[in-house]
Length: 131
Length: 131
Image (cartoon, rainbow over the protein chains, first blue to last red):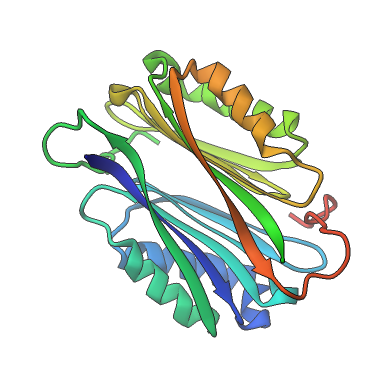
C-alpha cells in the first residue's frame, strides 16, 4: 500500500540551550533544513516565548517542518512531514541535529495517508501553487 | 516519566471533497477546534494548492495544529500537538471529524518530550508570550 507522506517525529535531547532560545537562528536553520532536504518553502512563522522557548513552523509545498523548544530542559520536539518522492526528511534531521548540538535523539518515522487507490507516481504538491 | 506534550496523529478518510478544498472554511474550523480544546491561538497560516489541496497551520501557545488535505482522495492528515494539562486535543479531533464529515479515521497518540527531570506541574507556554 502506498502512502502519500512520511512523517518523522524527532525528540532532540541534550541540546545547546542558547541555540534553543535563538528564534532568528532557528528560523534560518529550519529553512536551511527544508532547502537541503529538497523541499520548496512557502512561508515560515516563528515565535519567542517568555521567559524562554521558541515555536516555529516552516510550511513547505510538501507539507511542513515544525519545532518547539524547551531550553530549560535542553529539549526540542521536531516534526518533519514531507510528501512526494523528491524530498528526503532525514537530511533535514541531520542538519538540525548538528545545529542544535543534540547529545541524543529519538526518532519515529510514520507513513501518512496509506491508501489503496493512489495512482501512478507520487507527486508532491505543485510548486507553482497559488499562495 | 512525565512528558511535556501529547501529539495526536490523525488520518481522516472518506471526507467531503469540497470541504477539503475550502481554505477559508478550514482556516476558520481549525481555529475553532483550537479554541474548543482550550488552546490559545497565536496565528494561523493557510495555503491553497493548484489544482486542489490545502495546507494549514494554527500555531498555539501550547504547540500546533496542522492539516494537509488531498481532496482527490478524500483524505486529510491532521496533527494535534499540545503541551500542558489545560488543553484536550481530543476535543479538536471530534470537532474536525464532524467538519470534514470523515467516514473513518485512524489515530495515534504519542507522548512528546519524555523527561526524568520535569519539575512540578506541567505548564503550557505562557499566554502572555512575546510574539
